[in-house]
Length: 333
Image (tube, rainbow, N blue to C red):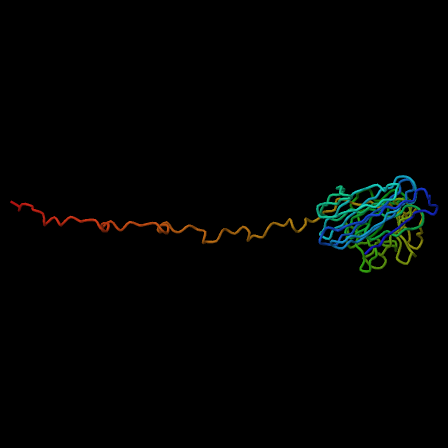
């Protein structure tokens, strides 16, 4: 199964810089893997993202293209079905090439060369997973996964969006302030919702004040520039916007201008529960050995030991002398 996302390659393609790199990806595990390649043209600041899902013990092809001369980097993410991942970077050379990638739980190799270690946890999100500049670009859900904690920094005043205890939304928060942190909590129908970490009953909303998680709290996120994002209602009639003085704007007056633009800061110190395999073994592993390992009581000699007969009885075959009365003893005086 193969699909790809491709963004902002540019209209005027320099034919001298067009090359393709074909990667045959083999899954050496017993579970499904997902491989994502994020290609970035440094000079053109263009981005493209390719994803392939590879079944167990199967091989799939992914083709990466470069459209211009200059430096191209590729940020790879391999996500395994057992809760592990591998991230590494390669360069996209200015030539046509075919290579082979081999993915196991011990690491990732390209052409027999080790390129990536496997670690436990959720793969970090690519901060530039979509194109900068130009028209709106949808932010894919995997960039803002459920449970990720973020901050929104307004481009209009360089302050941070927050929600107070009474549900007031402002844009006057300070960096890393407790009221400026929001947890990604998607709605049942898949729209982006941002829940206050300090006051979980409050969500960001496009109605001018905080909501309780209903339709006014549903957003779609778009990228409109390098590290510039906007949050719009699903019908695109309203948006989240902050005035220069930090006050929140009425949702229906917000377009795509400076007041609507935010930088997304990812809070990376989220607590991660330990994996299940680190749980101590059950108590029955520490039960003492069964009773049959206990040595026999001391009053019983070991089996096979020849116990001598009781002392009142002489050993068999021994000649007992006759009784003393049969001896020739002189009679008493």
